[in-house]
Length: 251
Image (cartoon, rainbow, N blue to C red):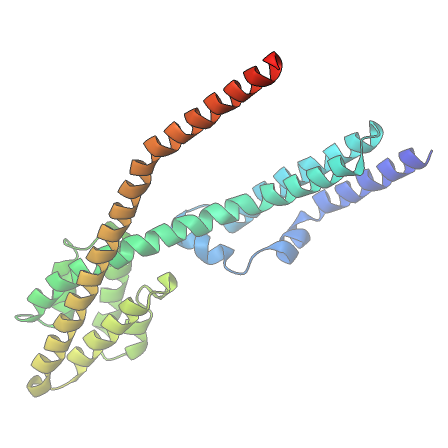
């Protein structure tokens, strides 16, 4: 009787969560989900949240099955953990994709910036940005077109420069945009000085990114080089265990 009541309460609770999943979504939604979705995929936020919640809530029914079959409390806890993992896993994947894009941006942005600096020697900032779109990495091409259009209407607005690619939360990009703003606003006498500062900053940034990329490739090769040694160790341990087991059987 008590088991039936408990199962009924869980089912009713599950139905309430299912009906009011929009409210539940607001309560359990991570703060940066909308930003991550905007940066990594075109999936609407509501659709993304509904899919996560439905997957997690479907596991709750297994808790009812555990109670019906009189399984131990450990199994109930396992299903709870599985439900939490199913809900958090898509978010973790979004976060991972975002970090990958930031890493890609940090490598490709300074290369594009060097092309822009060459164009700036004979063109205005807006014209240089327009010409540089064909050299721009795909990851920033749409942002660059929007940025250029904003500068056409208000070329002296510092906020326009700072907001360029700000969703990537990259300090180096913000610093480069501030230098570009100074270059666009200072007089002709100081413009070359600002350009030289930008070139120096970009050169240092590009060198650091290349070194980081080389270090990452080197570390990957080291891990691949350790795989044969790891395999030999496993084989050795297995043979030793078999030999030890044989000696025990004979003894």
